[in-house]
Image 1: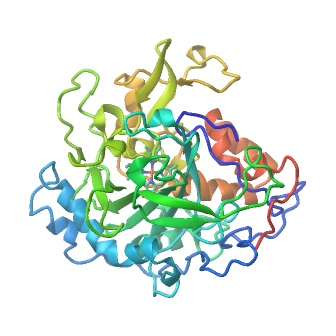
Image 2 (image 1 turned 90 degrees about the vertical axis):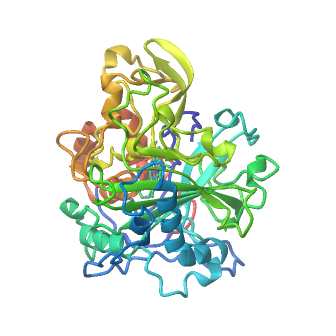
Length: 466
Ligand code: HEC
């Protein structure tokens, strides 16, 4: 894997899997497998079990949800948005405390949190995480992150309201997803947690953070495939929570929020996850280049959030977290080298969730004339922030309206658009179908949607499938 400093140009190569279609002949594959490899020998701790017993019937949202109550009868704004986030956090706290702080008891709960299928070739067998991102110290100059390459691991869970939609989308077999059923109902809550392999010695904001032990794949060529595998200790530093709430957010249907670890807060490690902010739209009416000092109306940032978490805010201060890659490095903008630029936001990036993926996740120059080949893969060609082309990524659209014509919108869901569907496609369609599909997908996204094939160069299995 080449490590890049640019957001979303890096995806870990998946562990090679013998389940990949070989020479056109399909080998049976189980989409619901938890992980393609076993825990290390001698490991006796808890293991990850894919949760896919999705509700068969629509699950009504709570009658008077506490997050709507927290708005006090007013539209969401800077005055009440953080109270909204706090109320959602409280609502899921019982479950999330067990998940993050007491994993051995997670599996024996009557859990109503679900995962997507098809990710077995990247999911670690003891916690179900996979590599999300890698970042280097230049991303966090103010908080002095020292680890040369810090790797972030992530995992995603859907609540019962959202789980019903997953069941409709994937059906019993997960072989023929019905994309017309990918729209979530009000009350859907989806969480994504991010853990880092940096230690407090590498990055002091992590002192006292909750830890998890993971058993990730060895990723060639960075890792030596023959090297002994090992358990990695990681720390929670970001916890996203998004809520489908068309009442509060009629333009987009969602309130996106994220919690970040703050070592200075009293209480257990879950209590110390504090809101970084919330957004329910991209503020398309505010051009942050023309009027940089005008306060955003659909984005709220917690003024008390720890320093490291605001280093990576998005375009014009729109919400984005330390694990999200809204800050892009080594950009060419209008022919000039711009070392660091804020070019994304939670909902800007998630707004591209569509099938097939026809736009890159962060704004990218579309014309090849201005985008000369870059064999070293060092630069991003970014349209000028605030320009019409750039602003395509900063609209407010309902979740059933795709960013690009000819694509099906997936209601802001990236776990499905960038992970589950590409794996499904890879495992179930012929080489010719995949080629047709890829011809529609921007070149720079090919590495995202080609995982298993990328790694089959040696044909060698690194770990045995389940
Ligand atoms: C530059 C792109 C980008 C930005 C910015 C971004 N995300 Fe994501 N997000 C992703 C991708 C890609 C995934 C899929 C993760 C996976 O499965 O590997 C994802 C997954 C998620 C999920 C799981 C559900 C889903 O849609 O897949 C949640 C929840 C989430 N992000 C919330 C947020 C929040 C909140 C923010 C801002 C604080 C944010 N994201 C910023 C790209 C982004």
